[in-house]
Length: 208
Image 1 (cartoon, rainbow, N blue to C red):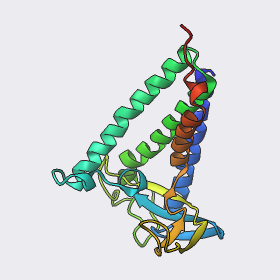
Image 2: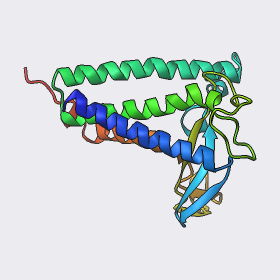
Image 3: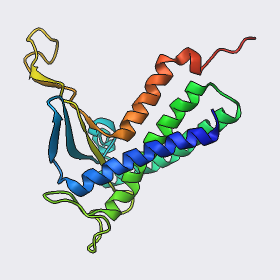
Image 4: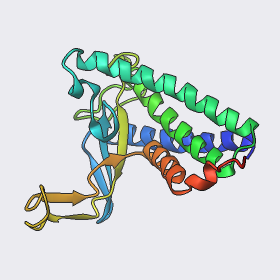
């Protein structure tokens, strides 16, 4: 797979991701939702931390939440350079096509969420009780590197109380699938799943 085709794949994912986030950000107030099917909703939430809403400050009291946010964003930026290098090197060494696609998906997804974290706090006003505007006269809802990631894809396929015999969570009200995510998250997850499922093809053993 050529660098041009990998770049095209990344570009398509980034456009789809950012277009969907822009639409939701400028048409929904935070918490608004539209039911597409009874098992799929467009639900506008914002994630200020890592995957599944986890925050770096949850693991330590030594740093503030805002400092943790900057550290996380900077880590993502450093990581994207590493992933980009891995992608280019794999293409130049004519690595397996599946490996190139997997890395490109992870790169595109990571880049999509980095854009939110770096710029959205500056270019949008907040969405609490209102629909946000792009480049508002009063300025953004936060500073550079402090933006929140926009999520909107919600698949509550099943809701109900779990049987009492289920370990640890028996009798609790449960929703499958609870997390809300975005196209960038889908790209990252798909890339990692491909690496795991097709491990032998993407990392073939060299014959001695």
